[in-house]
Length: 93
Length: 206
Ligand SMILES: [Zn+2]
Image (cartoon, rainbow over all chains, first blue to last red; front, side, top):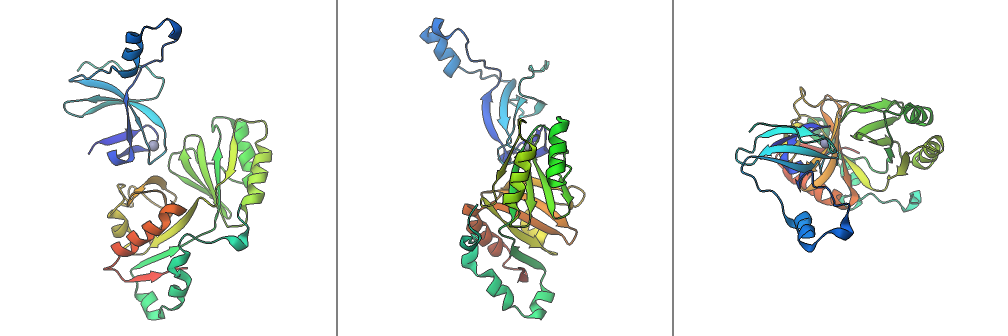
């Protein structure tokens, strides 16, 4: 069980949250020029690092707001919690 | 809104008023847990930007409430309460019957603003859990720390209990808790609470 700090509500149990997968994936703007491979990359291909992963969570059973989390995929340590729209913090791990 | 004569609490089938009336005074005095329903409240979902002074002022003028901007806090004024639900969202609670007038007053006061007031009185009922065993009973299902150093009167939270999404607020130090639960989950949650309280001396409070 992770203890996740909602930016609004503070630390809450993982069962209150829902996972939103990798963060910072922007929808392509030049869509008519995209190849099938580029579309597939945007839609399906995700990072799977052994280390820091930047990902989205929503406080589904609490305030129902989305936010970003930097989580270490080996230790599950949550290294940063930051707002939607903010750039990923630089973490040397 | 539903015509008041057609209103039926989602817990009506449990016959709580009749059960409460049938209790002996000794059993009520001896109880270490009170369970009950507080149905048919005025409930208004309010959305708006708390950084916008015009929004806060319009709400203050319409409802007399200073909205809490600290997360998971309750502000009270007279018979009305405002529960923080999100950074731009609150639940206004009041006595049943006020919803039509209050949602109208709020909507007029907020005209022209990017804000909204919606009557959600029929969405959920409220269950009372109070007394010496209340904290122990809720601790069986709520992932929050309800110790008074963490959760006190004037605090509220949205969380899960027995599979239902709930709004929890503490109203006094007995302690008394009120659980807002959608009508569709109320029957299940009441069963869960009574089942969990099987070893306690329960009084029905109406
Ligand atoms: Zn939250």
